[in-house]
Length: 353
Image (cartoon, rainbow, N blue to C red):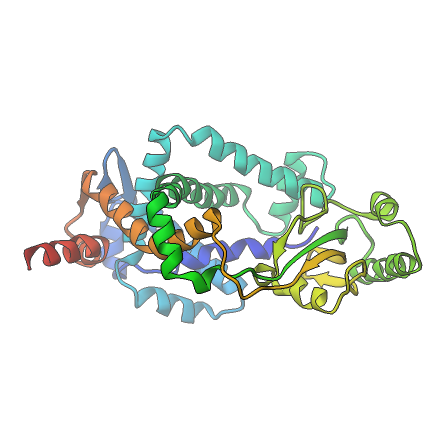
C-alpha cells in the first residue's frame, strides 16, 4: 500500500503559532488549562499543543527541518488559537444544522475508497497497515472531520446563499457590464481507461500494460471492451469514465496538455498520475472557442460568487463570533483578540467615520 504522505498536506493551512513558555512556567500550569471558552465548548492548552505537534510532524514529513518549522510557528503568535476558536464555532454550527451524521458518513466513505484502492478487505486491516506506516487512523479521522465540517458548513451557509442571492435583474446587469467574461470557451469531451498501481506488481508493469492497451486501441481495438477487461475505477470521470463537455481551461494540467495534441477519436499517450496509476484518454469531441458573448445563468452566478465569496466568508465568521460567547484567558487574550476580532474592529472603525 502506498504511504499516506499525501494526507499531511491538509495540515498546511494550520501553520500558525502560540506563545512559548519556560519549562518552569509549563510545570506550574495545569495540563488542560482552558485557553478559551467558546459557548459550551473549550479550547484547552493540551489541544493547542497537539495541534502544534501535528503541524510540526506533517511539515517534517514534507522534508522541512524541524527547527525551521518550530521557528515559523513561534513567529506567528496567537493565530493558531484564533483558528481553533473559529473551527470550534464551525463544529457547533454543524451540530446546530444537523450535519453530524452527514459528516461521519463522508469520513467513512473516504476510508471505504482507500480500502478499495489498496485491496484491503476490512477497516481494521486498513488501520493496521496505516499504523505500520506510523499513521494514526484516529488522527486522520479527526483531520477529515475538521476539513469536511468546514466544507459543508461554508458551502451551505456562505457559497449557496451567495450563489442564489442575485435576482434576474442583477444577473443581467452583471452580464452586460462583464461580457468579456462570458465568451464561449473551448470545450472537450473524453473517456478514460485508468490502470491503478494498487494490486499490481509495480509501477513499471502498469505503464507497460497501458502501452500495450494503447497499441490495441490505435489498431482498432474496442474501447469499451478493453475498459471492461482491464480498467479500474475512473479517477477523472468517476461516475462512468466518460465526461460531458468540460472547459479546456479548467482541466488539470496533467490531462490538459496531453489532450491538446489529440484529434477527435484519437488517444493520448499514457499519462502517469503520481502515486495513483496510469491514464489513457480518448478524445470524444472538441468544440472551438468563440469570441461572441452569451448569457448563461449558471456561469454568471458562478462569476458573481467568485467575486463575493471572500467578503461573504469574512462576514459569516464575524457573525458567528458576534453571536457566540467567547472568553479568552488573560494569558492569551493580548495575542489572540487582535487577530480573532480583526474584521469586527475594521467594521466598527468604518461605521464610526
